[in-house]
Length: 183
Image 1 (cartoon, rainbow, N blue to C red):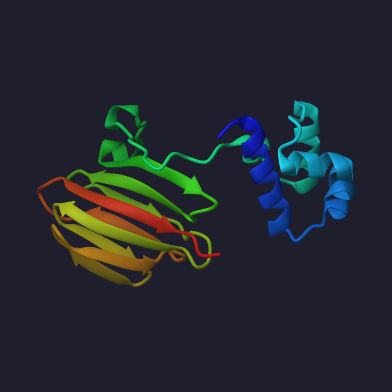
Image 2: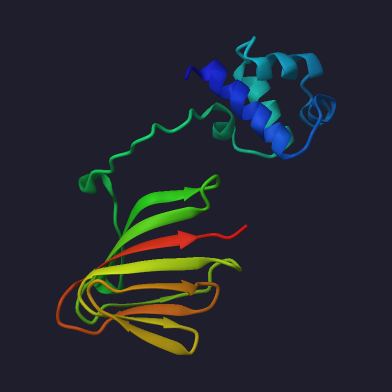
């Protein structure tokens, strides 16, 4: 998909999502109704300054107007991921798929070395975590409850309360974490 087509599709989706007429969008953005209609049809390639006016008027990121649809397949080589390290290197978080507003989730690979621990603050209301353990034994604490998970076990819990992850065994824990943000 070329940039003009991507802009046309994104502009129309953003306007319709907000239930705005072309006239209302023109009022918010300072871009004429006819120009907005031409952009949505893909008849014109708008200038950067026009795109900034639209982005600012609709209160969206510039990239949300120009981003192309992601390809059907994404390969994330491990060596391209910058890990986030906590607990003196005993808790390592590899961000795999960052948050996407359209999909409402993000995904991580977590490595917890023996005696590793992380206490997490509550996430936004309605947030859930889905974990699957691929190696080791881990304690997952949610509020006042604690759950022991072993290799092959999975858990889902509301993450809008304090929670923690603790390696309670001698083996390094490897797990997959998916965080879902409820609308």
